[in-house]
Length: 316
Image (cartoon, rainbow, N blue to C red; front, side, top):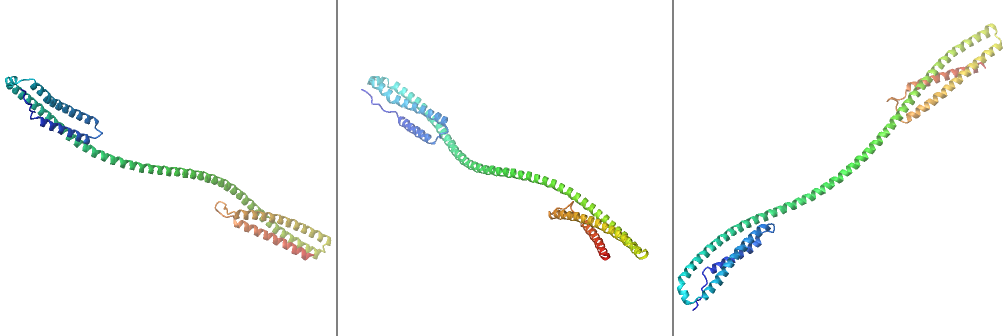
């Protein structure tokens, strides 16, 4: 007679542990980040090994014991009942020890899983912070690139402006150099013109003095002529000869005065042209005193000519 098999009392506990292990595996699959492949593989391999041990133990309990008991008769069971019971107790103790070890291992794995979950949460928060910081840095980088581009454009404009200013400065320096050369030439011309003016004024002064001296001589000759005419009955031929000499001298001096007058007028015209240009010589105007002296000399020479003309007209 075969004895009906009674399943061990711990089979339900094994089932519950197996279910709990499967639930934890699913939770770990949800919680573990993609960034931790090695830890996930290590944890899953440990859980898989534990699950394999539990399944193997369950299969051994469900299969081996009924087969052994089914091949035994009632006598064998009665004879070996005590031994079987002892062996069963030993086996159950061993299984209990293994189950305890498995439970402890699962608890350790659970603790590790909880620790990993906390680490995963921290990593997620860190990842979120890093992502936010990365986005902020990217935004700042875009802003900096825009500012850098604007600054580079401004630098290019400044370089162009600087180049244009340098060209203008060189052009102005060239013009200033040309103006300095021109000013030097004008100054030399003015000095020469002033020297010529002073020389002509001096010549006119000398001529005026000479004319005045000749006027005195003419007056003396006229006096002598009058004396000769009145006292000695000077001949008419001698008188005409003296008058001819006087008229000749008057003509020569008048021609010289006209020549100097024309030259002086030409010089005055040049001086007026230079003054109209708005240039000054050595920061001073042209010498107005020299021009006035020349005008006075011309006036004196003209007066002498008028006197000669009136006297000659009076004699005729």
